[in-house]
Length: 200
Image (cartoon, rainbow, N blue to C red):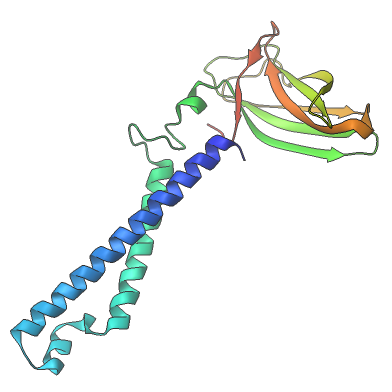
């Protein structure tokens, strides 16, 4: 999960939590106001309970909590997926909209000889991309660059709004490998920006 997605989820969680607390407090205050209003009208406590079904305090709290939870989930859904202008969410994220490629799947397996890597990437642009290449930088124990290899993303060209796949098997420098970095380049060798997460 990439940092952009984590930031959006974190913001949505905080928003829904504050929304839940606000709605819960509002409903408790409304229920208390109803009790006070009915208590003023009559001094007969049994009549107060009859006129106001929410007289039972556990019932008041339970109903308020459930209502606040439902509304906070709806608020979180709107925050994440609602096309609200100026809100940085799954729909409006500017970086995601400007990024040509989105990595939607990655799987790797560490071997005694090295590692294997395969993934899926989507073309988010309105045009077909020629010669898209996955550039894998092999990183050593001290974050030094051990090796770099390139593999063609198939199919070529990578059609607009369509996925492509790549896979590689690396069998060098095995004892010194710490990990890898993934990048992409176009047919001219220029870097292509990419992000991770859901498809467009």
